[in-house]
Image 1: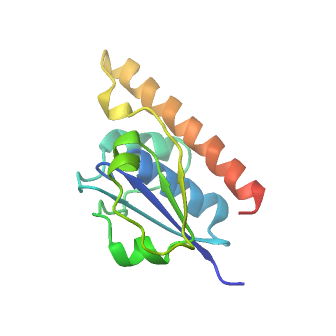
Image 2: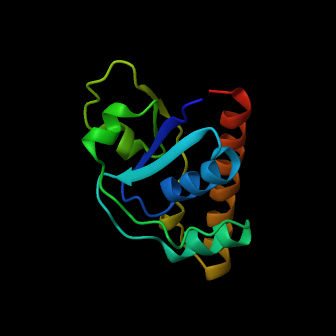
Image 3: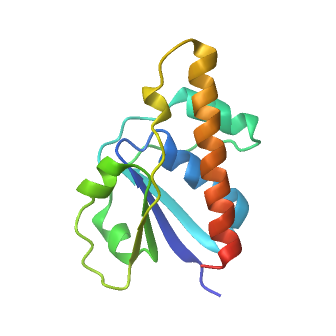
Length: 140
């Protein structure tokens, strides 16, 4: 069976889309080809790398990429993870592409002590993991 292509999009491809990418590769990599990108490339957020490592997933080899229109139009699913990416996503010309928006708070905007910021990263990570598990279990 051919793998379905899932393309996760965010503003900077540094946090949420990278976490979703890592979880789907881990939990559904046998069924899905997984890619992620951003409207801009901000580089990998070190806190996202750290909280994913705590969850047993190494995303250090991931790159922060800008949206590729060719991938966008051959994806089975395009999933935006932030409102800005949802509103500014390039036009998808292929009517077969299923586009969904899964909104998550941006942990990179968290303020407070380092522990409070890391707590926000862990919370968003866990929410993304739950959504990915549900997606994989639904058999999309």
